[in-house]
Image (cartoon, rainbow, N blue to C red):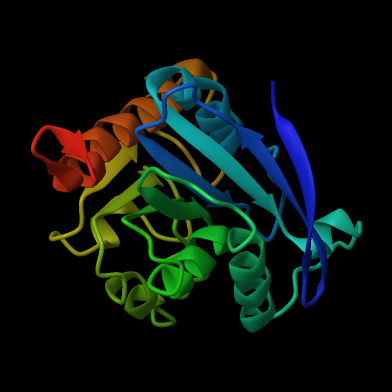
Length: 219
């Protein structure tokens, strides 16, 4: 069962929703996008499935959503709130920061400050729809820890082929920016979400936890 904690930030209260693993090998801290909250299908799938596989999931609901506002504040405010909320948690396993869309951008900008061991980008908004010249690639390339990008095949904010080949990337077939797939597409909605969960788990075990094993123990 999810545990909910309200925590203060410089811009109002945020909400932490925790789904714990009994014996975590890693902890995943996830932020939501600017067009929705922590109930998005990808964040909910990770929170529901990963704890059974040894990965605790903490979703951060930004103060603007907690307060019922419709518009997200400027990026600097999102970053300050994410850092303040993250500083309220104490984990003994490797910390992976990430999120979907705007939440992924904020996690990318703050990963170093938060001491992250990995970065997960779900539906990273590489550019506004139809505006590839307004690239946000610099934010992604600024992350210096193991990174996984999970992108929908039809994402208008950046199709998989637009990302640099040196970035590990998982493609969700036929999925859009919200990882929604057509009813008559090659995969069902359930299968699309399974792609996200399985790719994330495999990457965490291999590239995050695997990098911290010393003398047979997770450091």
